[in-house]
Image 1 (cartoon, rainbow, N blue to C red):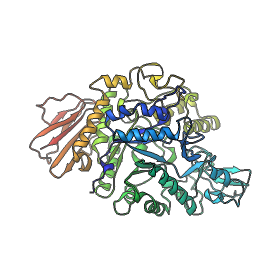
Image 2 (tube, helix red, strand yellow):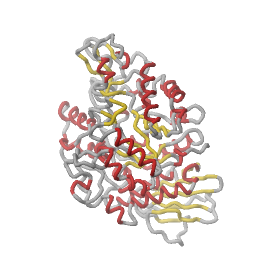
Image 3 (cartoon, helix red, strand yellow):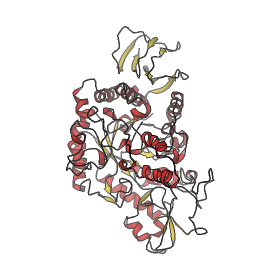
Image 4 (cartoon, rainbow, N blue to C red):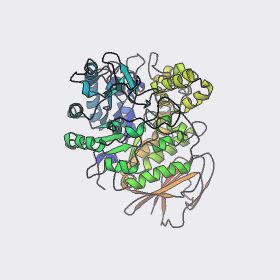
Length: 563
């Protein structure tokens, strides 16, 4: 396996709106990030992935872009961004920008021109269709509720939007569109950025004819993902992007790719002709849902450790030597990891450290989402009025207002799954508004900020922050943590997730107790070793303990080097 800097890196995601507000308007901004760069340097991360800061009407918090070459005024100026890039690079931190090119804002000049007439030169930049029997061109349901089609009075046709009606899908079948995208990519790369995270990049190719989705319920609109996820020309389009742009720069590229299999990921990331460095897969994000596709945030069920083992092991083994994994448990679109996969109560600190151990010991590039390193948790607002996420608000309106669902039945799902769980302001200290702003924050802070905040973490040598710091340092010092092969142990154990990492003669044993119980760990008899040296643990461990038989404490994590 070839070595690469992006395989060895640890990435930290910043959601700028919620990170740090420098001017008191309640919205995080670029100068706020500038003021916190030494915090990131102290943590030890190598790369920052910055969620969108481009000019946008902000219908979907910046994922609806109206000007790809300018900065949203709320966040600052292009000069602020250039200073931020320079200061990151001065600290040895690379910058990855979000690339959102499945769709643009309906306020982008291309779309404004596109809707003026059916023969406008920009008409074919988007997906326009006439209606069918007085209704939408097909029955697809949007990710954000309702139809994927919006009627436009000016020209009497519908345009496609897989997400919000203000996020019009680009027509990637048009080579002019692809050329425009490549131009804007070069523009940012030539400014010195170090890569792209590509938003829903595997949705850029749609099935010709845009056929109806099969009816799986009596709802008016149906999930049509099979016709716009991993479409027939996806590899062709990305191969062209690689030839035209990506191959000319030494960068990290990660594709957000819902619905991919390991085999799809190998096609996208293999070192011979794969276009991307790595992808984000979502199988483990759907373990706690009883609905698939776009319904994963509409339902909650108790997940089983065996399911997590199966998914993660399959991805580890199927990509081994062929592609590259990205390892994450949360981001701006997902609930907080410690609330979802661990314990956000009595064992919050131990559980957060266990999850950090898990993500940094798997093969792949680890991603840390802002606040994960201090153990921030989900929030449970009691009123829908406190939520800001368009997906959450639209779902509530559809299910409660339109369909009559009991809001008391839906709120627990929102508390568990809403994207706003990850978007409450970063908890810097125990002062008013968690030290995030001197004004009124755009979304309320989590009420637990007096106990959970960065100032407290930095003052405690046993905090989650310093545990992450140690893991990052260990990963830098131990190539086996990056390049070593993965092998699962105790695959049937209901509480313990254990595995080895092996690189030549270097071998690590990872033992994780995913629960509040105290299970017995028994080392399989076929694991031979001469000595065992503890590399890291989230509890104090007696040096005399025999690793062949251990009683684990709640959410205990241990990593040994086997000699």
